[in-house]
Length: 271
Image 1 (cartoon, rainbow, N blue to C red):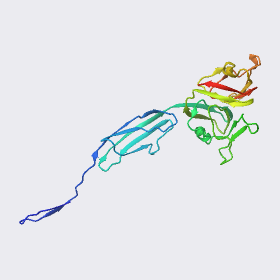
Image 2: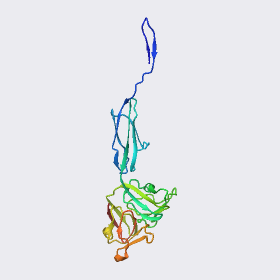
Image 3: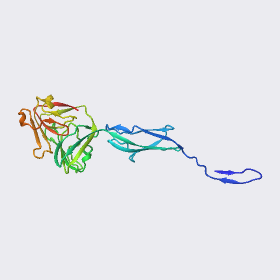
Image 4: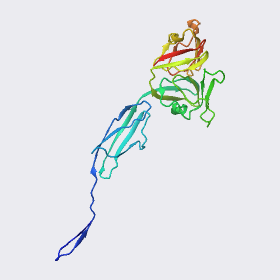
């Protein structure tokens, strides 16, 4: 700006820069404690005055997080006339199921409904530590085995993992698989005549044969593979055998189970 004297007896000028500083806006963060359900979990941000444009980051990224964990949140006003910011920590808590896997083959399952059933997403916590996964499609008359090899770019037939499934996984090293998800209420598992490979999507163990009372007239054998028991990993429950002949005594979350059906049926499992 320039100021000039306008007077018949005097003359003079002066110049300078007028700086109008931005006014300070108040920024408040809320909704910083949330529960995992597979959906993005944005924080709530309010400003005074209201309606100001904001840039919000989570651990430095503009992507709103979904997975359980802690995230540093920074909300900054983006406005010509106002400046302000606030920071906090978003904590997303949720259900998780951890399964200890040993080096070699493991027959396992998980008891939560994953937000993303894509096999790579489900097995993300052990990425680089496994080399092969097998599933079983009992509804097929021919190609029952389904395979996933993480080293292959294409050609895999096992693309998803669900809470109703049992699956074989070969570990190059021992590790813990942690699956994040939501609680299923009742899981209905369709069973076909012959062998079926299922999980146990429940929060609790259940004794045999009561655990399978809903299908009591349509199965005769249940088998499990407990890799932790190196001396005798295979466990058997024969519905027609005497008690002392069986060493599989319960259905428990985390394990996979082979069930031999004498007729098709459906097994409801309460979480």
